[in-house]
Image 1: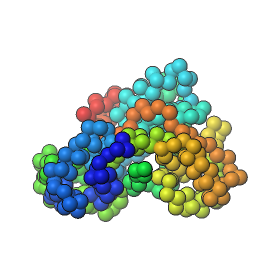
Image 2: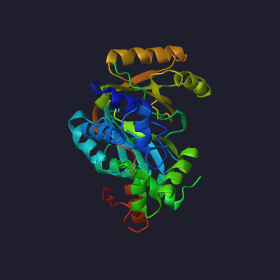
Image 3: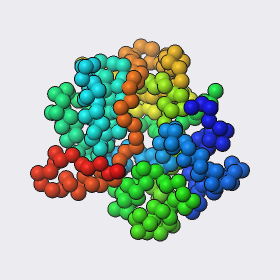
Image 4: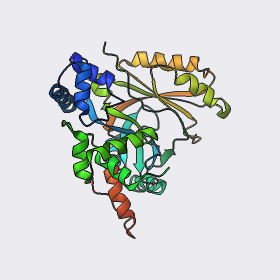
Length: 152
Length: 181
């Protein structure tokens, strides 16, 4: 996916934050890039279809809208896919990854309040028989501000 | 600072993203039954207060060729964490940096950062560089590369709204929410 056209790269480089808050934001972007509004929309649709673009949207600061935690489990390899799918089935779970460690399944739980976050963790423990390590955020030194892509 | 009911509805309405149409805020307003300007001002307020950290394109690293994703963690003495973090956040390849609790004996680490790269060897070298630069060579460290990605998406505020309603119904605490989409 590093063969994106220059216009798509410019969109990604320039608009991961400070998206225009005006009635026709894509026209504002188009004017800045020297192309037309429909071209911007068309590129965004293509990026979305190819999976590069997750969405044009808001990244919400942890704990400002609900409660969240990072959780980890040590799952036997033979059961990993099945347990990972079970965990992913919760609407409260996002970002569920296998990682190289004895604690090999890592996921984020986000819910309206801390009680529900703990309830989800307990239900996962109860249903899988595998303890869940709860690692809530204590201090954020750098949050998601977008990502400078190295195109080459 | 609590969110207003309108702000919660607004976050829920845009959780799947702004629609790719000429007037996306008007389209969101149609869903919420409010004006385009109410949507714009609502988002501006959420951004100004820092509830929304950023508004814009949310891209998937993996699809852009960033296949080497390493959660790098250290066990840093509590009094030294902030100084180390200040150095780490100044490194261009560190995308996130957090302090989380230790859970001994299985998890002794308290300082976390994410390094995304295209090449595993480069990311390993960056983790080494981060360790040296932040003065953490004497600290226990682990580099957890990701293997499989089972799920990646933003937080699901619409699903959460459904749940808030459901959790008020006695005896339904364990009911799995119906997916919002």
